[in-house]
Length: 619
Ligand code: M6R
Image (cartoon, rainbow, N blue to C red; front, side, top):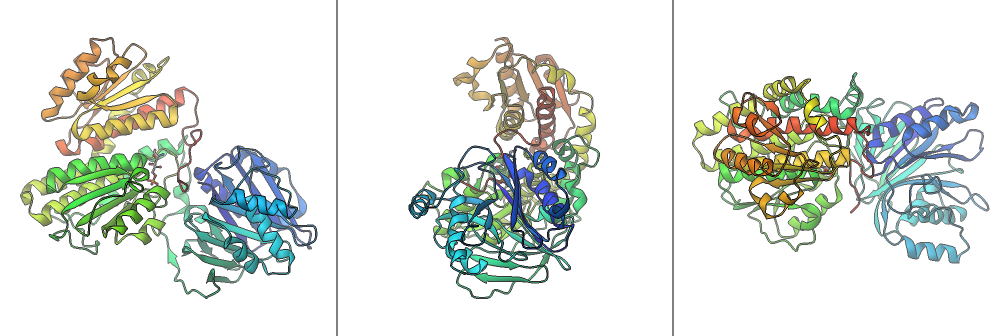
């Protein structure tokens, strides 16, 4: 939540780099955006801030000229409001000083938990606040110190030592116009390395058009950035050596590539995401090959699995529970991270903790990992983001290789997570001898073929969404039903619909519907039934019949040519046949497309749904 970016380097590049960086970080928040630039010829710091999406700031920048583009250093921010409503006054950068000392500017991602008492203290010393934000205290603490003659680095470190909470902060001072100092505690920060220029950002995505070489900044570290040097120190001034790493994401991956929206592009990228995620992880006999893990899946030391995650990643975790329990016969608990972290969880060193997070920076999931560490659990992270915070907290990492996901609604990363978790289930089952190798290889083969099956699903659904979408005209809510491993798919369908179309939607186990939610059913509450194969199919069908008897209009997600589905449903969204255990993978595709088209029919921005941000880096 909130994205920060910084640049020191060449004239005419600064504003462009900052704006491109913010564009690529806009998924982190779009309540307001702003820039602070060190103006040439000692003309001080100029800030430009606009409420609303980045386009508004881009408009304001477009009206500037002259000196504005001659700057060589600046910072930028895109905001997801936590303290203070979205307004120009609350937009970052926040400034301080400028009267008896140098003017300073800061951008911040995180929360200053003790901001109220710091504000009172600063006001007591005559400081005037211009915003309702927690961040403004940092600007004033910094300015006070800079006024006494402290360097920007020293002043920022001194200010940060007063804070409780989380931060990634970048700061500049009119007295040191060619330096940016940044630091982090719990919120993410990376340094991008260039030639005669250097960069800072909340995430590597921001800078892919400029560099692929990065340095991570760890908790409690400070970075001093000029056009030709990058110095990392601890908050106590000790120098830190850090090796650079290269990311394999391309700048092109951040573009729309002819699609109308990132969400649609990313839905269509799912076959490639699955392909890349599975590559090298199934051998020629379709047995799972996870030697990349630095611990032994066969270890008798693992007696249970706990999965922690939020949102869509939690739904992937629920699917993993079905797969691991069914194949590996290991008990699995799945918990929402924000609950788990405060649940005083029970476990020991025989507990394998699987933490799933696309971004690898969700605060609650990181805290859940910490809670699991406290009881000695071994942590395996599943993430799409190389080098993200979670990869550094975990004992082992399984990367999904979906490429950068920009749309706030997770799509391709969900299927990639599911693929990795199925691999894990197969790996655990194989290693523990819980199932015959042939049975596991058959599922492995199904998984290997899943990219083409998802491609087939996209083909089958092309031009077939109209009638289903029409059933949502005038709808006041929706019910998504599934049983067994299709229940998590139903939950994911409901989440997709509510987050981008703002329609209340419930995902429910079909058999549980009569215990309450069936009361919702009428003509204005379409029922989406996710039908699979196997024993629970007939049961789901009769649950759906019960809704039809009460006036429900049903959309079925079912195998192409499924006649029984055709009899209960007004519309069938067809998916190809796959091994029964893999049905959630193909069944998710029509649910994503349904949410997408319903939201588009309502004229909504599917990539930037209201009130949301893609990375939830605050509690
Ligand atoms: O980055 P993470 O996977 O940890 O994010 C978890 C959730 O915030 C995320 O899945 C969210 O629910 C998505 N917007 C759903 O589409």
